[in-house]
Image (tube, rainbow, N blue to C red; front, top):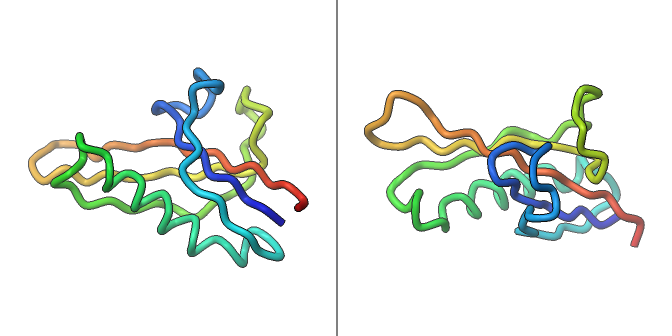
Length: 101
């Protein structure tokens, strides 16, 4: 299976056509590529100039929740930016498309 990771503009349900492809992973199933997708999301955020001096991480992918309007993705995950001097962390949604090769 092929798993394409897209970074949203903050909210996975908004401006879906503007989401940016940031990584592609191959594996038998989502569990096999989970660690790679987490690393891909965190590395993508760390590479953005606005987050240059921040720590980054991501939660594991999970199936897209029922309340979501977006139908493009089979999985979603959240990237986290930890600014050094801020009251809040920044959360960025990622969507994952699962394709048979």
